[in-house]
View 1 (cartoon, rainbow, N blue to C red):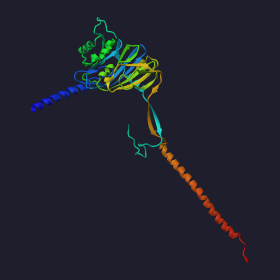
View 2 (view 1 turned 90 degrees about the vertical axis):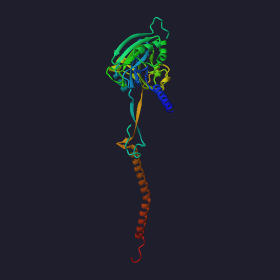
View 3 (view 1 turned 90 degrees about the horizontal axis):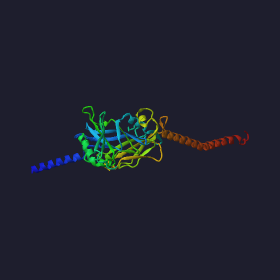
View 4 (view 1 turned 180 degrees about the horizontal axis):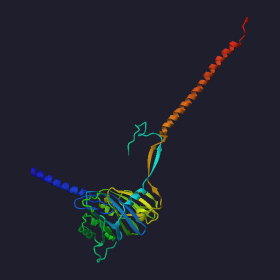
Length: 380
Protein backbone atom coordinates (compact mmCIF):
# COMPACT_ATOMS: atom_id res chain seq x y z
CA UNK A 1 0.00 0.00 0.00
CA UNK A 2 2.76 2.42 0.92
CA UNK A 3 4.57 1.68 -2.34
CA UNK A 4 1.45 2.57 -4.28
CA UNK A 5 1.19 5.84 -2.38
CA UNK A 6 4.83 6.67 -3.11
CA UNK A 7 4.34 5.99 -6.84
CA UNK A 8 1.22 8.17 -6.92
CA UNK A 9 3.02 10.94 -5.08
CA UNK A 10 5.98 10.71 -7.48
CA UNK A 11 3.71 10.84 -10.51
CA UNK A 12 1.89 13.83 -9.07
CA UNK A 13 5.18 15.65 -8.48
CA UNK A 14 6.33 14.95 -12.05
CA UNK A 15 3.00 16.18 -13.41
CA UNK A 16 3.20 19.37 -11.35
CA UNK A 17 6.72 19.98 -12.64
CA UNK A 18 5.62 19.56 -16.26
CA UNK A 19 2.60 21.82 -15.80
CA UNK A 20 4.76 24.43 -14.12
CA UNK A 21 7.19 24.41 -17.03
CA UNK A 22 4.30 24.95 -19.42
CA UNK A 23 2.74 27.91 -17.65
CA UNK A 24 5.99 29.64 -16.64
CA UNK A 25 6.45 32.75 -18.82
CA UNK A 26 9.88 31.94 -20.29
CA UNK A 27 9.82 34.57 -23.00
CA UNK A 28 7.88 37.59 -24.08
CA UNK A 29 8.56 40.45 -26.43
CA UNK A 30 6.46 43.10 -28.09
CA UNK A 31 8.07 42.88 -31.54
CA UNK A 32 10.10 39.68 -31.56
CA UNK A 33 10.86 36.61 -29.50
CA UNK A 34 12.93 37.28 -26.40
CA UNK A 35 14.35 34.24 -24.63
CA UNK A 36 16.64 33.93 -21.60
CA UNK A 37 19.54 31.57 -21.04
CA UNK A 38 19.21 28.25 -19.26
CA UNK A 39 16.45 27.95 -16.68
CA UNK A 40 16.19 31.65 -15.92
CA UNK A 41 13.15 33.71 -16.77
CA UNK A 42 12.58 37.04 -18.41
CA UNK A 43 9.41 38.90 -19.30
CA UNK A 44 8.92 42.08 -21.25
CA UNK A 45 6.55 44.22 -19.22
CA UNK A 46 6.47 46.99 -21.77
CA UNK A 47 7.96 47.93 -25.10
CA UNK A 48 8.28 51.57 -26.09
CA UNK A 49 9.34 52.43 -29.61
CA UNK A 50 9.84 55.55 -31.70
CA UNK A 51 9.28 55.17 -35.44
CA UNK A 52 10.47 57.78 -37.95
CA UNK A 53 9.30 57.34 -41.55
CA UNK A 54 9.83 59.78 -44.40
CA UNK A 55 8.24 57.65 -47.15
CA UNK A 56 11.52 55.94 -48.06
CA UNK A 57 13.38 55.04 -44.91
CA UNK A 58 12.13 53.77 -41.57
CA UNK A 59 13.96 54.16 -38.29
CA UNK A 60 12.86 52.28 -35.18
CA UNK A 61 14.31 53.16 -31.79
CA UNK A 62 13.08 50.63 -29.26
CA UNK A 63 13.48 50.14 -25.55
CA UNK A 64 12.29 47.21 -23.45
CA UNK A 65 11.27 47.25 -19.81
CA UNK A 66 11.90 43.75 -18.52
CA UNK A 67 11.63 41.74 -15.32
CA UNK A 68 12.86 38.34 -14.18
CA UNK A 69 16.17 36.85 -13.10
CA UNK A 70 18.00 36.33 -16.42
CA UNK A 71 21.60 37.49 -16.83
CA UNK A 72 21.61 36.82 -20.56
CA UNK A 73 18.84 36.89 -23.13
CA UNK A 74 18.26 37.18 -26.84
CA UNK A 75 15.55 38.24 -29.24
CA UNK A 76 14.96 38.34 -32.96
CA UNK A 77 13.19 41.01 -34.99
CA UNK A 78 12.16 40.59 -38.65
CA UNK A 79 12.62 43.62 -40.92
CA UNK A 80 11.42 44.06 -44.52
CA UNK A 81 14.81 45.20 -45.86
CA UNK A 82 18.57 45.39 -45.24
CA UNK A 83 19.02 46.94 -41.81
CA UNK A 84 21.68 48.85 -39.95
CA UNK A 85 21.79 48.77 -36.15
CA UNK A 86 23.28 51.15 -33.63
CA UNK A 87 22.74 52.16 -30.04
CA UNK A 88 19.95 54.62 -29.39
CA UNK A 89 19.78 57.54 -26.99
CA UNK A 90 17.63 57.00 -23.90
CA UNK A 91 17.07 60.76 -23.61
CA UNK A 92 14.85 60.49 -26.68
CA UNK A 93 12.14 58.82 -24.62
CA UNK A 94 12.38 61.47 -21.92
CA UNK A 95 11.86 64.20 -24.52
CA UNK A 96 8.83 62.47 -25.96
CA UNK A 97 7.32 61.79 -22.55
CA UNK A 98 7.55 65.46 -21.65
CA UNK A 99 6.32 66.59 -25.06
CA UNK A 100 3.20 64.41 -24.96
CA UNK A 101 2.43 64.93 -21.30
CA UNK A 102 -1.33 65.40 -20.68
CA UNK A 103 -2.67 68.90 -20.11
CA UNK A 104 -3.98 69.43 -16.60
CA UNK A 105 -7.03 71.61 -16.02
CA UNK A 106 -9.07 72.45 -12.95
CA UNK A 107 -12.86 72.24 -12.90
CA UNK A 108 -14.75 73.91 -10.07
CA UNK A 109 -17.95 72.56 -8.61
CA UNK A 110 -20.36 74.53 -6.43
CA UNK A 111 -22.13 72.23 -4.00
CA UNK A 112 -20.04 70.21 -1.50
CA UNK A 113 -19.42 66.51 -2.16
CA UNK A 114 -18.87 63.58 0.16
CA UNK A 115 -15.25 64.59 0.96
CA UNK A 116 -16.08 68.24 1.58
CA UNK A 117 -17.29 69.87 4.80
CA UNK A 118 -19.82 69.35 6.28
CA UNK A 119 -19.90 65.76 4.92
CA UNK A 120 -16.38 64.98 6.11
CA UNK A 121 -13.85 66.11 8.68
CA UNK A 122 -12.20 68.30 6.07
CA UNK A 123 -9.17 66.06 5.46
CA UNK A 124 -8.58 64.61 1.97
CA UNK A 125 -7.15 61.24 1.07
CA UNK A 126 -4.09 61.26 -1.32
CA UNK A 127 -4.40 59.89 -4.61
CA UNK A 128 7.64 36.77 -51.24
CA UNK A 129 8.90 34.10 -53.82
CA UNK A 130 11.31 31.33 -52.91
CA UNK A 131 14.98 32.21 -53.23
CA UNK A 132 17.20 30.54 -55.83
CA UNK A 133 18.97 27.38 -54.75
CA UNK A 134 22.33 29.15 -54.98
CA UNK A 135 21.39 31.41 -52.06
CA UNK A 136 22.53 29.96 -48.72
CA UNK A 137 19.70 29.12 -46.30
CA UNK A 138 21.18 31.54 -43.78
CA UNK A 139 23.45 34.46 -44.57
CA UNK A 140 25.27 36.71 -42.12
CA UNK A 141 25.07 40.28 -43.38
CA UNK A 142 27.02 41.66 -40.46
CA UNK A 143 27.76 41.28 -36.78
CA UNK A 144 28.57 44.05 -34.31
CA UNK A 145 29.14 44.47 -30.60
CA UNK A 146 27.13 47.50 -29.41
CA UNK A 147 27.58 48.06 -25.71
CA UNK A 148 25.94 45.14 -23.97
CA UNK A 149 24.40 43.94 -27.25
CA UNK A 150 25.78 41.31 -29.64
CA UNK A 151 23.93 42.06 -32.88
CA UNK A 152 23.75 39.74 -35.91
CA UNK A 153 22.02 40.82 -39.12
CA UNK A 154 20.80 37.78 -41.03
CA UNK A 155 19.05 36.61 -44.16
CA UNK A 156 17.22 33.29 -44.38
CA UNK A 157 15.44 31.22 -47.01
CA UNK A 158 14.57 28.38 -44.66
CA UNK A 159 12.94 28.91 -41.25
CA UNK A 160 14.41 25.66 -39.87
CA UNK A 161 17.89 26.65 -41.01
CA UNK A 162 17.43 30.03 -39.34
CA UNK A 163 16.45 28.36 -36.10
CA UNK A 164 19.45 25.99 -36.35
CA UNK A 165 21.85 28.90 -36.90
CA UNK A 166 20.46 30.82 -33.97
CA UNK A 167 20.64 27.84 -31.63
CA UNK A 168 24.21 27.00 -32.68
CA UNK A 169 25.17 30.58 -31.87
CA UNK A 170 23.80 30.56 -28.36
CA UNK A 171 20.12 31.35 -28.91
CA UNK A 172 17.88 28.90 -27.06
CA UNK A 173 14.64 29.41 -28.95
CA UNK A 174 11.16 27.87 -28.64
CA UNK A 175 10.12 25.16 -31.09
CA UNK A 176 7.37 27.40 -32.48
CA UNK A 177 9.84 29.96 -33.82
CA UNK A 178 10.38 28.21 -37.18
CA UNK A 179 6.62 28.10 -37.73
CA UNK A 180 6.08 31.74 -36.75
CA UNK A 181 9.00 32.98 -38.85
CA UNK A 182 7.87 31.21 -42.03
CA UNK A 183 5.64 34.11 -43.29
CA UNK A 184 8.65 36.41 -43.13
CA UNK A 185 10.85 33.86 -44.92
CA UNK A 186 8.24 33.57 -47.66
CA UNK A 187 8.31 37.37 -48.08
CA UNK A 188 12.14 37.36 -48.07
CA UNK A 189 12.45 39.60 -45.04
CA UNK A 190 15.69 39.84 -43.13
CA UNK A 191 16.34 39.54 -39.39
CA UNK A 192 18.08 41.33 -36.59
CA UNK A 193 19.15 38.92 -33.87
CA UNK A 194 20.28 40.52 -30.63
CA UNK A 195 21.95 38.89 -27.67
CA UNK A 196 21.91 40.85 -24.44
CA UNK A 197 25.03 39.98 -22.49
CA UNK A 198 25.91 42.67 -19.92
CA UNK A 199 29.63 43.22 -19.57
CA UNK A 200 29.14 43.65 -15.83
CA UNK A 201 29.48 40.21 -14.28
CA UNK A 202 26.38 38.92 -12.51
CA UNK A 203 24.17 41.77 -13.67
CA UNK A 204 20.50 40.80 -13.90
CA UNK A 205 18.46 42.08 -16.83
CA UNK A 206 15.80 44.15 -15.15
CA UNK A 207 14.13 47.52 -15.71
CA UNK A 208 14.70 49.71 -18.78
CA UNK A 209 17.28 48.27 -21.17
CA UNK A 210 19.45 50.47 -23.39
CA UNK A 211 17.60 51.36 -26.59
CA UNK A 212 18.59 50.16 -30.06
CA UNK A 213 18.09 52.03 -33.33
CA UNK A 214 17.28 49.89 -36.39
CA UNK A 215 17.10 51.51 -39.83
CA UNK A 216 15.97 50.04 -43.16
CA UNK A 217 14.48 51.12 -46.48
CA UNK A 218 10.71 50.80 -46.70
CA UNK A 219 8.02 52.35 -48.89
CA UNK A 220 5.40 51.66 -46.22
CA UNK A 221 5.35 52.21 -42.51
CA UNK A 222 5.33 48.79 -40.87
CA UNK A 223 6.02 47.82 -37.28
CA UNK A 224 6.81 44.07 -36.85
CA UNK A 225 4.51 42.47 -34.28
CA UNK A 226 3.68 38.94 -35.52
CA UNK A 227 6.25 37.16 -33.32
CA UNK A 228 4.59 38.71 -30.28
CA UNK A 229 1.99 35.95 -30.49
CA UNK A 230 4.55 33.67 -28.82
CA UNK A 231 4.50 35.75 -25.65
CA UNK A 232 2.88 34.06 -22.67
CA UNK A 233 2.05 37.16 -20.67
CA UNK A 234 -0.09 40.21 -21.57
CA UNK A 235 1.82 42.80 -23.56
CA UNK A 236 1.58 46.57 -23.84
CA UNK A 237 2.97 48.75 -26.60
CA UNK A 238 3.78 52.44 -26.56
CA UNK A 239 4.46 53.75 -30.06
CA UNK A 240 5.62 57.23 -31.06
CA UNK A 241 5.29 57.82 -34.81
CA UNK A 242 7.12 60.66 -36.56
CA UNK A 243 5.91 61.21 -40.12
CA UNK A 244 4.60 63.90 -42.46
CA UNK A 245 1.02 63.36 -41.29
CA UNK A 246 -0.97 61.97 -38.41
CA UNK A 247 -0.79 58.16 -38.57
CA UNK A 248 -3.02 55.32 -37.40
CA UNK A 249 -2.80 51.49 -37.38
CA UNK A 250 -4.76 49.92 -40.22
CA UNK A 251 -6.17 47.37 -37.73
CA UNK A 252 -5.87 46.24 -34.14
CA UNK A 253 -4.09 42.97 -35.23
CA UNK A 254 -5.65 41.05 -32.37
CA UNK A 255 -5.14 43.53 -29.53
CA UNK A 256 -7.39 46.08 -27.91
CA UNK A 257 -8.35 49.15 -29.91
CA UNK A 258 -5.28 51.42 -30.27
CA UNK A 259 -5.64 54.70 -28.40
CA UNK A 260 -4.14 57.99 -29.56
CA UNK A 261 -2.72 59.89 -26.60
CA UNK A 262 -1.14 62.75 -28.55
CA UNK A 263 -1.24 64.13 -32.09
CA UNK A 264 0.30 67.35 -33.28
CA UNK A 265 2.98 69.03 -35.35
CA UNK A 266 6.24 69.53 -33.45
CA UNK A 267 9.54 71.22 -34.27
CA UNK A 268 12.15 69.99 -31.79
CA UNK A 269 15.22 72.12 -31.40
CA UNK A 270 18.34 70.23 -30.43
CA UNK A 271 18.59 66.86 -28.71
CA UNK A 272 18.06 63.32 -30.03
CA UNK A 273 14.47 64.01 -31.09
CA UNK A 274 15.57 66.81 -33.44
CA UNK A 275 18.26 64.52 -34.87
CA UNK A 276 15.76 61.74 -35.52
CA UNK A 277 13.22 64.16 -37.00
CA UNK A 278 15.82 65.54 -39.41
CA UNK A 279 15.91 69.02 -37.96
CA UNK A 280 12.56 70.17 -39.30
CA UNK A 281 8.91 70.09 -38.30
CA UNK A 282 7.27 66.68 -38.13
CA UNK A 283 3.89 65.33 -37.13
CA UNK A 284 4.00 63.28 -33.96
CA UNK A 285 1.38 60.65 -33.14
CA UNK A 286 1.56 58.77 -29.84
CA UNK A 287 -0.33 55.47 -29.67
CA UNK A 288 -0.98 53.09 -26.79
CA UNK A 289 -2.21 49.51 -27.21
CA UNK A 290 -2.68 46.50 -24.97
CA UNK A 291 -2.52 42.83 -25.95
CA UNK A 292 -4.26 40.90 -23.16
CA UNK A 293 -4.03 37.67 -25.18
CA UNK A 294 -0.88 37.79 -27.33
CA UNK A 295 -1.83 34.52 -29.05
CA UNK A 296 -4.50 36.45 -30.95
CA UNK A 297 -1.98 38.69 -32.73
CA UNK A 298 -2.39 37.93 -36.42
CA UNK A 299 0.03 40.23 -38.23
CA UNK A 300 2.29 43.25 -38.19
CA UNK A 301 1.21 46.80 -37.58
CA UNK A 302 0.92 48.72 -40.82
CA UNK A 303 0.28 52.40 -40.26
CA UNK A 304 -1.41 54.80 -42.64
CA UNK A 305 -2.13 58.51 -42.78
CA UNK A 306 -5.46 59.64 -41.38
CA UNK A 307 -7.96 61.70 -43.36
CA UNK A 308 -6.79 64.87 -41.62
CA UNK A 309 -4.06 66.07 -39.29
CA UNK A 310 -6.34 66.88 -36.39
CA UNK A 311 -4.32 67.69 -33.27
CA UNK A 312 -5.11 65.98 -29.98
CA UNK A 313 -3.80 66.09 -26.44
CA UNK A 314 -5.13 64.25 -23.43
CA UNK A 315 -6.64 66.45 -20.77
CA UNK A 316 -6.72 65.49 -17.11
CA UNK A 317 -9.32 67.35 -15.09
CA UNK A 318 -8.98 68.03 -11.37
CA UNK A 319 -12.25 68.88 -9.62
CA UNK A 320 -12.06 71.44 -6.82
CA UNK A 321 -14.71 73.03 -4.61
CA UNK A 322 -15.31 76.63 -5.70
CA UNK A 323 -13.98 79.05 -3.09
CA UNK A 324 -13.94 82.82 -2.67
CA UNK A 325 -11.15 84.12 -0.51
CA UNK A 326 -10.63 80.62 0.89
CA UNK A 327 -14.28 80.30 1.91
CA UNK A 328 -16.53 77.81 0.04
CA UNK A 329 -18.73 79.77 -2.36
CA UNK A 330 -21.76 77.68 -1.43
CA UNK A 331 -21.36 78.69 2.21
CA UNK A 332 -21.15 82.36 1.30
CA UNK A 333 -24.19 81.96 -0.92
CA UNK A 334 -26.20 80.21 1.76
CA UNK A 335 -25.13 82.77 4.36
CA UNK A 336 -25.94 85.61 1.97
CA UNK A 337 -29.30 84.08 1.13
CA UNK A 338 -29.99 83.68 4.80
CA UNK A 339 -29.13 87.31 5.39
CA UNK A 340 -31.39 88.39 2.54
CA UNK A 341 -34.24 86.27 3.92
CA UNK A 342 -33.72 87.78 7.35
CA UNK A 343 -33.63 91.28 5.92
CA UNK A 344 -36.78 90.72 3.87
CA UNK A 345 -38.50 89.22 6.90
CA UNK A 346 -37.53 92.21 8.97
CA UNK A 347 -38.84 94.62 6.39
CA UNK A 348 -42.11 92.72 6.13
CA UNK A 349 -42.43 92.65 9.91
CA UNK A 350 -41.78 96.36 10.15
CA UNK A 351 -44.31 97.12 7.44
CA UNK A 352 -46.90 94.99 9.16
CA UNK A 353 -46.27 96.76 12.45
CA UNK A 354 -46.62 100.25 11.03
CA UNK A 355 -50.44 100.19 10.53
CA UNK A 356 -50.87 99.05 14.12
CA UNK A 357 -48.60 101.78 15.34
CA UNK A 358 -50.38 104.37 13.22
CA UNK A 359 -53.80 103.20 14.46
CA UNK A 360 -52.73 103.42 18.06
CA UNK A 361 -51.29 106.84 17.58
CA UNK A 362 -54.45 108.07 15.86
CA UNK A 363 -56.71 106.86 18.67
CA UNK A 364 -54.67 108.58 21.32
CA UNK A 365 -54.67 111.88 19.44
CA UNK A 366 -58.47 111.81 18.99
CA UNK A 367 -59.15 111.42 22.70
CA UNK A 368 -56.95 114.31 23.64
CA UNK A 369 -58.48 116.75 21.18
CA UNK A 370 -62.05 115.90 22.30
CA UNK A 371 -61.47 116.86 25.90
CA UNK A 372 -59.82 120.08 24.91
CA UNK A 373 -62.31 121.29 22.34
CA UNK A 374 -65.67 120.37 23.90
CA UNK A 375 -68.22 123.01 25.20
CA UNK A 376 -67.24 124.92 28.30
CA UNK A 377 -69.55 124.16 31.22
CA UNK A 378 -71.47 127.06 32.74
CA UNK A 379 -69.81 128.87 35.51
CA UNK A 380 -66.36 127.75 34.36
